[in-house]
Image: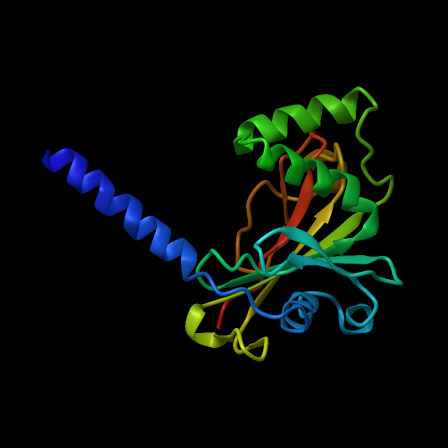
Length: 196
């Protein structure tokens, strides 16, 4: 009996937490998501975010070569990203596989196979993603303002290696570029600036 009661309490708490998720208006999501992009790309970037029903959708059609992703309102803090449009097939495939319930390793393996098989296209040139994160107390969900956000950079260079780029496999100091997932479709240069 206690187990049934305990389970019911957990389900109620989870339901209440879900019901209390507040989805900011589209204009606030667009504003915040665009903060991750370089200044000259912000106004024209395509922006994905969340509808009032929680569905993931296009909030603004863009007119340049950037795509931005709004913050997930179910997660703590703020985390938005913007990337070059040539990365969209790769990113969209990841979103589809995540929705299907695949874990990170499965997503990596499926995309690796599809890229090598010519089914999934990766950019022919280096392509950048910008990611902006911040703590809950520094994010105003009513205005979309972020204070003391942390911006990091990822440059995708499919199948590059430490040997072909001269980059180390880990940074020796904060802010030093290094290569992650070398030799794979997801090879990318990581640049994590030193935090204040």
